[in-house]
Structures are given as structure tokens and as C-alpha cells.
Length: 117
Image (cartoon, rainbow, N blue to C red; front, top):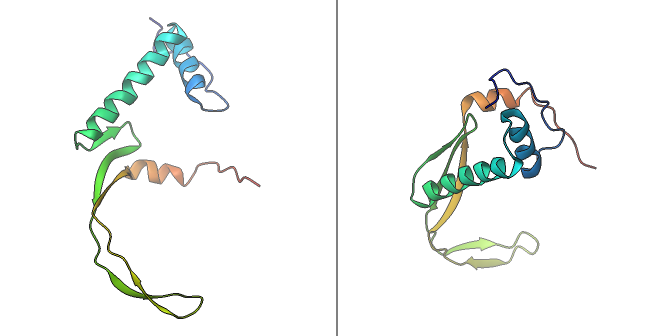
């Protein structure tokens, strides 16, 4: 195994493949094994969330399933025409939710942001 001080440059672009390459180089293991480890991690997170758990994802936060409550039918207005309409009721639904950790939010303020044109 590699020593803890093994310095490997972080990838310029973060993809599944570059993450696996980085882990493989840092820990001196085959890239396939690194990919398997990452895939296992994602499978564990998925299984925990599907069981209804709040699953921690490193220093980033927690992922879980939230129940969005049902809504009743109600009256609304078309903003273009002003015509009154009935907005139909919606059933309760389950939606994935990610809650960021406070420490990650604080760090995000310093992050570099690339604006797409």
C-alpha cells in the first residue's frame, strides 16, 4: 500500500474515470479496483437511502428521501389572461433530498465558479 504522504495531483476535470485514476495512483492499486471501490461506495449510499436512512456523504452533508405532502385542489388564476382556473390536487410524493453540512456551505463561499456562456 502507498504511504499516507503519497502526493498525487488532483485531476483537472472530475469525472468517475478521473476519480478512479487518482485513487489508483494515490494508493498504488489497479484502476479497476479503484473503480470497484467507488462503485461499492455509491451502492452502499443508494441502499441506505432506499431503506429510509439519512446517509452521510463525507464532509458534504447527508442524502435522504423526503415525503412531499399531498395538496388539495384549489382555485388559481392564469397570470396571462386573469382567467380563474382550478389547480388539481396532487398526491404525496417521495423526492430525493440532499442537506449540505454547515462546514461545506462555509467553504463554498470561497469556491471558484466557472460561468458557462
